Image (cartoon, rainbow, N blue to C red; front, side, top):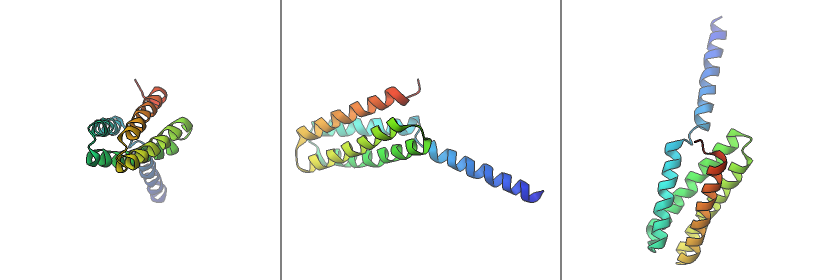
Length: 126
C-alpha cells in the first residue's frame, strides 16, 4: 500500500512539473515580450544600436521559449510556426542593426509586430 501511495504521489509531482513547464508562457511572460518588443522598436527608430541589439537578443530567447511552449502544448502548429518566425526576425534585427541598416531592422521589426498580432488572433484568450 505504501508503495502504491508513493507511486501516486510521484506521479502527481511529475504531472504538476510537466504542467508548470508547459504553462511558463503566461500573461506576465507575454507582457514582458511586448515591453521588450516596444523597447527594441523604439531603439531602432532612434538608431540606438546597443539597446536594439540587447532587446532583439532577449526577444530571441523569449520567442524560443514560446516555440517550446507550443511544441509541448501540441496541436498548435500555427503557434510553433509564428514563434519560430519571430525568433528568425529577432535574429534578423540583430544582424541588420550590427550592419547599421536601421531601415531593414525597422522592416523586420514591423514584420515581427505582425507575427505577434497574427499569433494573438489565434491563441490569445480574451
